Image 1 (cartoon, one colour):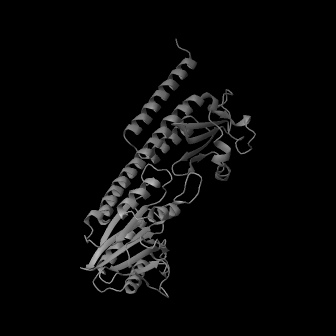
Image 2 (image 1 turned 120 degrees about the vertical axis):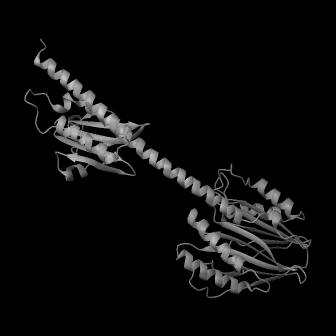
Image 3 (image 1 turned 90 degrees about the vertical axis):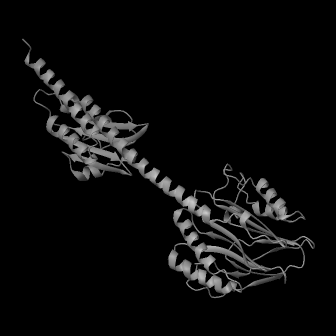
Length: 409
């Protein structure tokens, strides 16, 4: 006849198997995290009779998800980073010199893919009558339960996070496609024997905050521009897309650059609400009069090079950036007469701030060097792109890259 001790052991073994089966079934049934934690709490406190339980779990940050048998303030005084992260294996509270942990019998860390995802602190208020502490008697079972439940919780969190990431990825891909349709293709620019145009655009992320354009205002007059929004990401790209749409609506024959800048400033102020601004360089060239008018609204000064006289000039005349102030107090329009064949290079911050591996910013010097010769604008662009390694594989590229070049014959 079996002894009472053997019967109790058998009963407890059956209880453990049934408990594990119930937890596994709950996980397979995709029960909410709250219900899984409730089952875990009931097993520890009601079935296993543990006196103290505190569970820290990580989602977006470490927080207490279960606390019983001890003051909440005591549990809140425990800092996961300094008090618990050093423990990678089950540790007795009495073996630590940390006074905040000495009230617990065991510290049970839970790792998933070498990352800590939970810490379970257990202890007794009183030992059982036979002198065997429930925490000692049930330690391995508690560890097994803890690992099963919190790995399941972490997998659920990762699954939800992956769904969100996939959704964001699809949204980014769609935004990228839409923006790419808005960014002009230099092959579609108006053709004119008196002007040659080259453009290069490399967004750092799937969507970018740079913009350029080249449009015919009349048979003999052409508008061109380059712009860069402060900041990065979706919001920057959306602001720039709105900026472009507004700009296109105002491109008409006989337009005045100053009026355009003021209207764009009002739109950016309204849409960005002071959070962002746009640096902008806009020019109009009339090839019959050979007059070139421009306004630099806080943008990196473009370079103009006269291939006949070898005269090099930076174009700074203009005003503050678009959206920096509610009203732009003063706008100056630059005017140049291009008597000879000339080349113009415009660029955004991604070029201006490009560094070498040594941290030196020499890109602008290299652009000046490439521009200052008699080669045509296509050859100049090829040389710049090659010299600065302007491609996705270049680890030194940390921002959107945009170049716009014109050659006036």
